[in-house]
Image 1: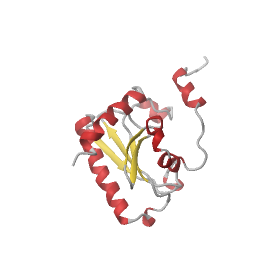
Image 2: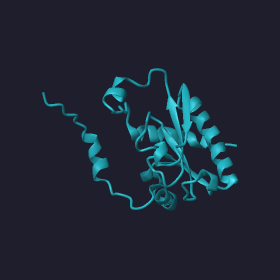
Image 3: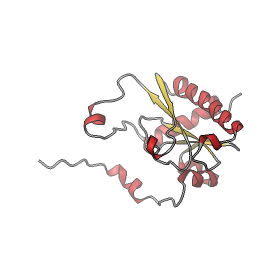
Image 4: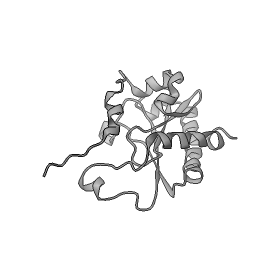
Length: 166
């Protein structure tokens, strides 16, 4: 038996242009491309962007504009701002997006599991009861059960109410 996973929707990902250098610095410097780069929010200190390799639908990251791989080198006001955005992001995911729970975390360095180790970032991962299955453990594969663009648009529509509102 020939085991083939046919995924024609991945064609766009494979053909897209590759970003040279730090992907987060590229996103930081190209505000005009926010929609294309799936930026949810940006201000003078940080930006929030959808994770292109999500653990679950709605997984996004909070990233400082400053390029650093050391949390201890980040200015305190930027770190506190990231924490404020994280609180608002959790509320957005729970109340607006319907998540039952949220994982928050940072992998500081490649040895800690950071996929992009050169630029710190804070993950917010919405969770639901029974949102994992055997394929994650056995097949080392994640199944993303919904359209990425629809999720991006849904969360982006919630940003003015949960992130920008004071």
